[in-house]
Image (tube, rainbow, N blue to C red):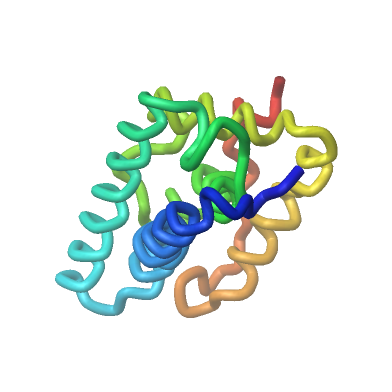
Length: 153
């Protein structure tokens, strides 16, 4: 499967830049904010971007084209971690991905791609985040939950 087909490259690059700046990096802007105003600004920007993607995915199954591209996999990594880590640890708690109809459908579709599910180790992901940021989680307690519907199917 060509994840970066020539006819879609310009659009993939545009979407990649948007996703990276507003979502992939947006969760870190929230999580590492040290001032309330900076956190709130990052929070609004992150969820405005997620709302935009939610609307776009209501029009088509993938971000660019009719099959997954590099843009989808760039977003997948953040979506797969979002409910388990970013909601609580990084205070990105306006909505879970599970609360978005289109984003949750999309996440489920991507995790069903052959061999992808095997790359998602939520216990390892949670341990990494909750144990490696002592300034955010000084107790280093790793939460037992949540249940993630996209992995239970």
